[in-house]
Image (cartoon, rainbow, N blue to C red; front, side):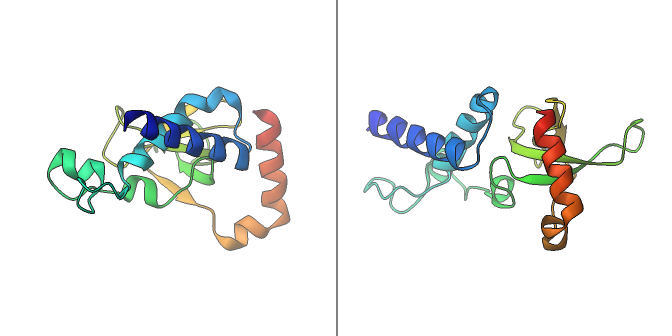
Length: 146
């Protein structure tokens, strides 16, 4: 049973890394994200009784809010704290939830310089932003920076 679970996590990991063109240096973030996704899935095992692993382990309904809004390596805006001496909003890539840093809904994001930020104020791009030529140019510059 454990070998099957590991095989399926690896399959999901390879699929995400390839489909989203994720740099190899983020392999660990992606693997943790895949493990988290699998723990929040009802896998159809007869002993799970239709529940996901996280629900069974915790004894209460699992919270999926930390993985529901973004997919791994999605473009998003990260807000910096007001006292920071940088731009208030920065275009980043979403790298999963931050489990050991910040509040419950704190996310890890990677900047164009390759720095991992932990932010609780992260917003998806709007459809208009996603389709604009200016945003496409910003994405290209960020990708080249990585």
